[in-house]
Amino acid sequence: MSSHSMRVAWLSCALAVPVCLQGQAQRKEAPVSASQESQNPLVSDFKSFSAKVSGGIAGDHDRKIYRSGNLMRLDFEDSYRVTDLSTLKMWGVTGDSCVEFERPDAGSFPFSAYHDFKVERVATKEKEEETVEGHVCRIENITFTPRDDRPVVVRMKLWEAEDLDGFPVKIEVDVNDKKIISTYTGVSLTAPDPKLFQHPAKCTGGMPMPSQKSKETGGGAAPKKDSITLPKNPQP
Amino acid sequence: MRKLLLLLTVLTMVATFTVAASARTTTYSFTLRDTSGDAYCDGFTVYLYGSPKTLVDGYHWNDNCASAQTNVNGFKGGVAPAYQYSGSGAVLIVSDPLFGNGADGGSGLVWLFNAAYGTWIVYESGGGAGEYILNYGTFINGEVVKDVEKGTKPSIRR
Image (cartoon, rainbow over all chains, first blue to last red; front, side):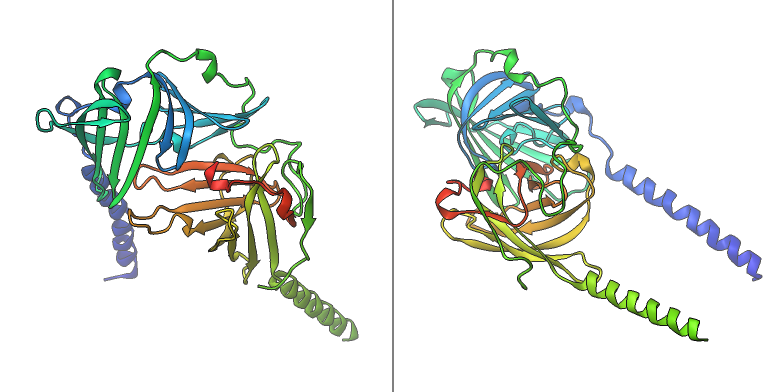
C-alpha cells in the first residue's frame, strides 16, 4: 500500500470513529414515552407552601422554606436564597447585594432533584399508614431511574399527611446506599407572599463585584471582628 | 566572547531564580466568613506547592467548632466564574471528606477558594442528582479570628 493510500485510510478511520461514538450516545439516551410515565409529585404537586425544613443533604435545622410555583426560597440569618426549580439556578440575596448561581441551594433537595429521571410511583399496601409529628400519613414509594446509562437507582419514600392534602411531611431518599431524610414541620399550604421571591434588579451572574476584588493576600468583605495574622509561610 | 559569557550567566541566574520562586510553597490560612464578613468557627490552612505549582494539601480546622480537624487536598486550576462566588480565574479546588462514610454512607464536599477575590463556595454531591451549593462566603488570607470572638457555628451548618 502506498503512503498516500495509508494516509487516506487513516483519515477515513479518524472521521468514522466520532460518528460511531455519537450514534452510541444517541442510542443510550433514547427517551421513554412520557405518556407511559408517572409524574414526580414533588414537581407537579405542592406548588405553594411554607414550612420549616430539617435534615436533607444540607443538614438544616428548622430552616424556613417557601415555595411558589417553580421558585423555592430558604431563609438564612441575614440573607435568603431562591432556587428556580425549572432551571436549577439560584440567586442569593444579602441586603442589597445579589449574586446569581448556576446550581441550586442544597436546601431545595429533593424538590430540585431527579427532574430528568424516569419516575415510577409504586402503590403501597392499602392502609399503610404512619403518624409523623401528629399527622396521619399515607406512605408512597417512588423509584427514579436515569434516562441514560448512569447506574443509579433512587428510591424515595414519602409520608403524605392526610390533613395537609397529602403534603409529604417526611421524605426519605435512598441513593447509593445513603439515606437522606428531610422533615417538614409547621406546614402551611397558603400561598406565600410573592414578594418573598423577588430579588434586586441587579444580580451579578457569578462575576466579580469590582469593589470586592483585592490583592492576593486580602480580599473578601471586611471582617467585623478582631483577628490575628498568622506567621508567613510556615512549612507543611 | 566575553559578552556571550555574560549573557549566558545572566540567563542562568534568571532561570535559577524563576525555578526557585515557582518552587516556593505558598500558605493560605484563614477563617471562613459569611457574605457579610461575620466569622464562622472554622477555617482552612492549605499549602500550594509543586512544579508546576498547582498541588494543594492541608487541613480544615475546627470543622465542628470543637477542635476537630479534617485533612484535605486538591489542585489549583481554572473554574468558570459561573461556578464561583463572585470571583473569576484560578481557584484552589479542595476535596473535603468531612461528610465522610457514616453508617448511612458519605457525601462529597468540594471547596473553591479564590484567593484573589477572597471568596469561597462549597459544593455537595447530589449522588447523581447534580451538585448542590451548600454555602458560600468570604475570607481574608492570613487572618484567623481570635478564639474568644470566633463564630459559634461551622460554615457547613450555614
